[in-house]
Image (tube, rainbow, N blue to C red; front, side, top):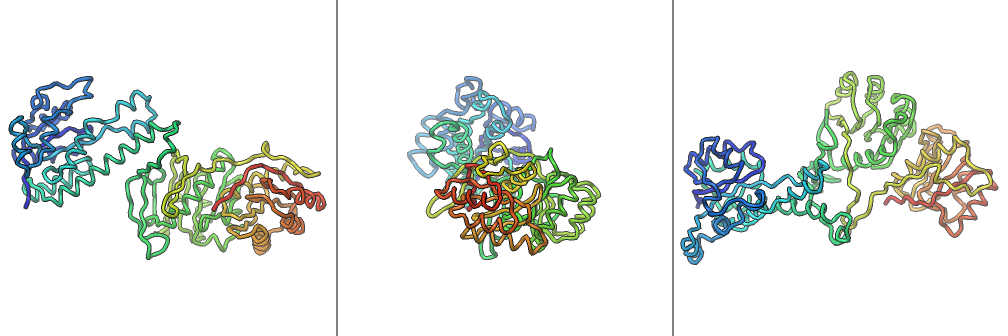
Length: 511
């Protein structure tokens, strides 16, 4: 049986989209209670409104910090209409029922994101609003709660269809939505207040929205959802909806390209199943793409491509010859867009500057694990030469490049490179020897001469076998973390083969 709405409390921060709902309440003669700016807004719509101060007999105090926190307000929301005792108390204390609560919350999250001073952030911690939402949601048997301006249109349509009345199912739905809003809000406050304290690691508090259902997960029999605001990071300019696997690869691509300064040389990376199958830097984006593609044109088919410069027409013409799923760039020339949009499903993403999370989270067993993002990448200043010969200037540049790729490649991994050019990598192998042999074979299969190339390893060499195999293939310089009890064996092998080796002291496992 539908329950009519005869009275409403309306107190919102954002007034936009509210007019049709106010008009409907006015049409049905609903008694409206309100405060401050919302009261003025409703009066401007020509609807009669009673100030909350008139209901409570108490003015707003402390600069508006306390307005609705009063028994006549919360009693009107929380008393149970089916309980004789509650009805008797409400009558005794002259507490009128409130059947509808329309409240949104102060923009705390937005204020934090704006970089506002702490005093301004603290003032955006809503007290009355969140209490009203919780009270109305708790008493959903009798009260409808509206917790966001995004709900105004749907609620207006619902009330129009049911003669300004609601069913229990309706009220339960909006109560759940209100608790989602309050829990998300409290999570953001906790994360802000706990940062830099011992409480920040005491509990894992995550709340990401909106939720975007995906076509499916990794495979068609798995459901998938993305939680977060992709529009804050990308403008999708063309193509079909991103899939679960697209998103995983896009994440890997974006993190890899962060290693290559947009102010530096043009860079291009091609990824497949989160591993780079081609990475290159050059004086032009066109040449960087061609060099990256030459690393492994077979694996590049159906991959994700990312660049650090605007895509021009010449590069677009080359890209258009390849079937790929996603292209990510900071910008696209108009002529390039014309070429690239020729394939209707091809996804084109314009990347925006954004602050990424500092933590990585993953479900595991019956819980969750969290770690810091791996933000470290070693450069020449971090290299410690341990062999008789030191790497040349060109070899140092190649080692730096190889390390950037190695850091973002699944372990066990070996990366073979020259300055600005990935030659091949062995990825996700159960032994480092297998990873090296895979890389050597792959480089040779695509016509690369390894004589004078360099090698990067994501972890130390437990035995000198990798050094021996690499030296025989023509590798002249090696970078690795070091730390094995048999480091000296690998160093001796390098000296015997005339190779240079530098240690970094930093491991980059990627599981």
